[in-house]
Amino acid sequence: MTLGDFVVYANYFVLTYFLVINAVYLVLYAISFAEIADYVRRDVFSGLSELFASNYAPPATIVVPAYNEEATIVDSVRSFLTLHYPLHEVVVVNDGSKDETLNVLIREFDLHESDQPVRLQLETAEITGVYASPTERLVVVDKANGGKSDALNAGICAAQYPLVCCMDADIILEEDALLRIARPLVESGSVAAVGGIVRVANGSRFEKGRIIEPKTPRKALPNFQIVEYLRAFIAVRTAWSRLNCLLIISGAFGMFRRRDVIAAGGYASDTVGEDMELVTRMHRVLRENDRMYKISFVPDPVAWTEVPESLRVLGRQRNRWHRGLIDTLFRHRKMLFNPRYGAVGVLGMPYFFLFEFLGPVVELAGYVAFAAGLFLGVINLPFAIAFFLAAIGLGVLLSTAAVFLEELRLERYPRWRDLLKLTFYGILENFGYRQINTLWRALAIVSFARKNTEWGAMERKGFDEGEADGGIKYTPGKDEKRAETAPETVREPTRRSE
Image (tube, rainbow, N blue to C red; front, side):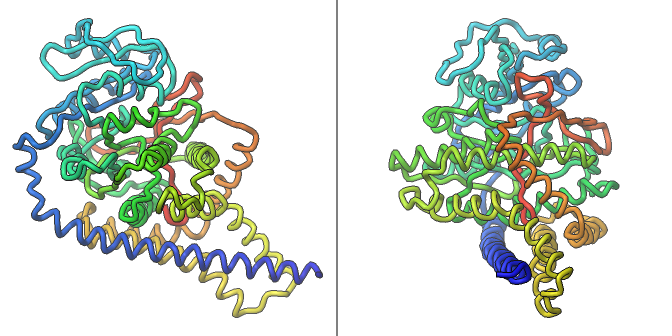
């Protein structure tokens, strides 16, 4: 076989791969479109206000891990305490902060040491104190630093209620978000966990911990990420939920039945993708125990988060997300193509392995093979056009379709100017931004092979009274270099997310 023949075969292989993966995406989009249309139609008769006023909603605990959050923790806790829900408490876990996080909470909420027991049903670092507010349903657990997963486990142990909502300290929730994310758990006892949508806060206006006006940001990089998040949550995650093989509930905003999280062993502390790993392990444990269950995603309980505004910070984030994905797939590889695990084994795991894990390798190889084919003169014009349409054209279609699905069904961005801007970025991202993301993810495979477990330092400007244009914040590990909590894994070209 000559070099030219090898290059030709390589190009045909990559073209076939692109066609297959985009065909899968189109099927997922079709399922998501039908599911969201049905969800919006049912939501009109959902009786959300009646649910709020009734006694049918089980009480819930919001678990908030915090590390060095003194600047924003008071406003965040106040916003969580005032969410619309019949009965809920907030458990803040101070994960060995080195700043005044604990003292600020004690002072602002008049906290006193409490003898409330913490049921240590999960392994955590040493708990050094428990504080409670005399006027609010607020508990603060003070503990030695153990990382975000360890802090979440401590909060789940301290929770008094059957539903636990795990989220980041710097997330902004819409007022009815807790009620909306709990609704599937209220409606069916077989639902074990629910994920809500995470949206990009950069550019939007906020006041007193509430969003006033959703807007797109001025800078390009956050706009690219808005399109990604729309693909990830609305256009793809909805479909996986419908098929009951959703493997990711964003670490930034998800609700679980406390008993099922504990039965699965809680969050793993030795991974950088703790959100995906927990959900995948829950699938595995529930299947192995022959439980009839559902892990769901609902598109309207909204959490707003700031995203990176520099390539340096974003690259570190995406590298970590992809390493977390790989780690989860390898930990639970026995589920791959295993019919014992139902749709998760025969659909979800193969998809993530073939298209998420290996996708960046094949895509980069495709670009190299295509360039080599042009250089050697072994690629004709019809093939070049087909390759371009498969690699770029369908990516444009999928990105713009996600934006229009948002407008037609959810209408979160009220201004046409914002939708036109997002459509423009949905087209533009396929010419450079997507390729950079592919490179980051390919490099993450190398990092994983070298056993790199760092989170990477991240930055956040924080929510101002007005417009938010920021980065990322939270130090979830024992190492001070770890300084971010991610909304979720995001896949190019379709997809955070935690």
